[in-house]
Amino acid sequence: MAVCMVAGHALDGWKLREREAMRKFVIKTLQRPRPLPAGPWLMTQRWNDLLLAHWPVSAAAIGALLPEGLQADTFRGSAWLGVMPFWMDRIKLRGAPTLFGMRGFPELTLRTYVRDQRTGTPGIYLFSKEARCLLAALVGRGFYNLPMHWAEVRLTQRSQREFEVYSRRRLSSQPVIFQARYRGLGPSNRIAEISSGTLENFVTERYCLFSRNRAGQAMRANIHQVPWPLEEAEALIERNDLAAAIGIELPDQEPVLHYARRLAIYIWPAELVRAVMVARPVRVAVTPT
Image 1 (cartoon, rainbow, N blue to C red):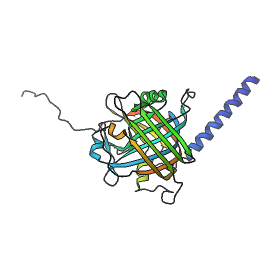
Image 2: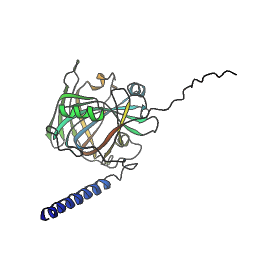
Image 3: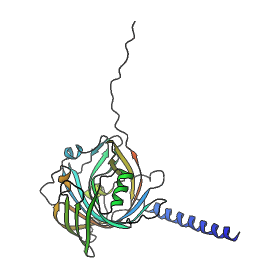
């Protein structure tokens, strides 16, 4: 009986902590334009010391690389291609222990911004995701159909907000290298609050992650994130092969730069995006009179 009472108290304590955690989770969703998706999230992780470097590119060029059902989203007449190096930690699959080797590691992503043609839902589409952790690359491909690549990725901190990043894709027929130095410049009044109609709002207020499965169909995973703590940034990009690897030529201009210190991410299971319904002629057998 005593053992049962102790176990009962332990269970009550766990439920109390779970309710408190969910209460805090709900409080952090107030900036969302729509409610959280139904069902529990599948994975949570934290991104740290991010650089966001964005270039305007042709919407037609981006659209040609997307699966059926998605279209390039535009800001000021252009689609946008973003490179984002960072390191992640606090990685957890719901109901599973932390996997060995996935406690923290650097990543590098090439992303653009899209909309579901049927619903107009805005989201992120990843063209590539370089990960130093081979297990993370396998999990990303297996659970979310992400274009994960095992890579040599090094992210070195030089000062509190200054970093060097080097990435070289492994097992690639051609070298795909990214090398840069960047630093955050601290909070500023200009981007203290991310308002509608700004590029900052366009690239951050996204609550869907789109991908392509092996059959070429568009997949969608709902995501939630706390408000982005954006800062202005400086960067010297010494080499960037990521865009060329997918056949996109970046414009000869400096990218728009931002830095973020930390960002908590929650990800729901992936699901199939329904293709746009297109009217097609129906063949009818001719009935003799």
